[in-house]
Each structure stands twice: as structure tokens, then as C-alpha cells.
Image (tube, rainbow, N blue to C red):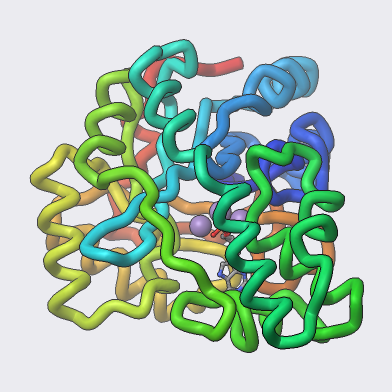
Length: 280
Ligand code: AMP
Ligand code: MN
Ligand code: MN
Ligand code: MN
């Protein structure tokens, strides 16, 4: 039972790193990575808890990247978190979230929704990591939308009225930093981007040529058909296959069950076969 993508309160998840590990273990997980957005601050706590439970744990992070004007997420796995270049890249990516929140709040105010800046910040355990998820939770709590999905389709999603363009890390620099720290780069939830077949081919080819290792063949609550499709694409582009729940909180139906991803199709070469010996 494997899960190589999930979140804690260090970014936009609701459980602490130790709680994430305990729940994954309770769900039968045997290999876990915690992949908070742009931040490795939860890894030490998660690893310590995984050690107590004899659950195999690998370092993880989900880096926000801008590729040809679009936001793409790259999961980094099995890297040395002390690597200075990687930490500098992550620190750079984290800059600007508060500024972006200010602009989002201004756009919401024009729609008659006030107090989003303070409201979202109050929900973020880590102000540096305040995200659209926190704004969505604010909108739900205030009764403006029924659920997270609606918050994104109505206001916050890319191209929606209150979305704000933002420049994240460069794809090549992100892959180089992860590889330089001894890790691997994986394209997160490829089935979630609104990319044409051509754009997807360009992304996969460029990612591979930059030294990218794999793609998530399973993510969240994607379909079996998605897994089969992305397993074929991974094979075609010579990429390894990863699997992650993208868990953020309990009772969030867009994420999968924490710690318990379905099996990958047989033609996959799993990323974890290439992990360094990090049995804990
Ligand atoms: P941010 O990094 O602040 O732009 O926030 C991105 C986060 O918002 C993602 O990690 C997801 O947790 C969430 N998110 C983005 N788009 C959607 C969507 N369409 N539906 C639900 N959650 C989303
Ligand atoms: Mn998130
Ligand atoms: Mn993501
Ligand atoms: Mn994620």
C-alpha cells in the first residue's frame, strides 16, 4: 500500500505531519511520502512518527512551477532536504503568496465578498504558505459556496473571475534542484491539467529531456481509465510511474484515501523501484 503525495498543515492540509503518518499507517500504508507545497518543514516530524510505526517513509515536496504560462505541479521524491540549492529554490517559490492573496482578496471584494485576506490567513497554520485552499475554506465558512470544488469553479480556478496569474519556479530549475539534491522529479496529477494532446506531448518530452523521472499514473480519485491512459503515456515517454492520494483532509471527495492508492497497471515501472535505501 503506497502513497507518494499528500499534504499536512505545513501547506494546505488539515492534519499535522504526525497525524498524516498515523492515519496513513492505520489505512494500511507501507510506503509513504509527505509532499507539502513548496515546503519541507513537515518532513522531520513525519519521518520521526513513521520510524515509531516502522512505516517506510521518503522525503517529498510538491513544487509549484510555471511552464509556458501555466501552473504545473512537480512532486519531488527521495531527495536530501538539507540541500541548499533546493531550499533556496523553495524559499523563492514561497515568496509572493501573501501578495497574491491580497490581489485575490481585492478581486473578491469587487464581487461583494469582503475579508478574504484576513479570513484565509486565519485558516493557514503557516502564513507563508497561505493558498487558494484557505481562501476556498473561507468562502465555504462564509456560506458563499457549498464546497471546495465550487469555490474553484466559481471564483478561484485558473481563468475564473478571481484568479490571479502568478510566476512560480521554472520547470528546468525545479528538476535540476531536485536531481541535484539526489531526488527524483515527477509530474503531479497530469490528468488534472487542461492541456491539449500536443501541449501534453511537449510537456512530457521537455520534462524528460530536462531530467524528469516520472509522472503520477494514479492521483486522487482518478478513474481506472486515467491510470491505463497515463501508464501508456509513461511508457511512451520513458517515464517512471508514481501514485498519490493528494490527500488534504478528511471528507474531501476530490482526494483519494490517504495511504492506500490502487495498484498501478502492469506495464508501469514504479518510481519506488529507484529509491535509495531509505527504509525506516
Ligand atoms: P495554490 O498553490 O495556492 O495555487 O493552491 C493550489 C491548491 O488549491 C491545490 O494544491 C489544490 O489543493 C487546490 N486546488 C486547485 N485547483 C483546484 C480545483 N479545481 N478543485 C479543488 N481544489 C483545487
Ligand atoms: Mn493543495
Ligand atoms: Mn497539486
Ligand atoms: Mn497536492
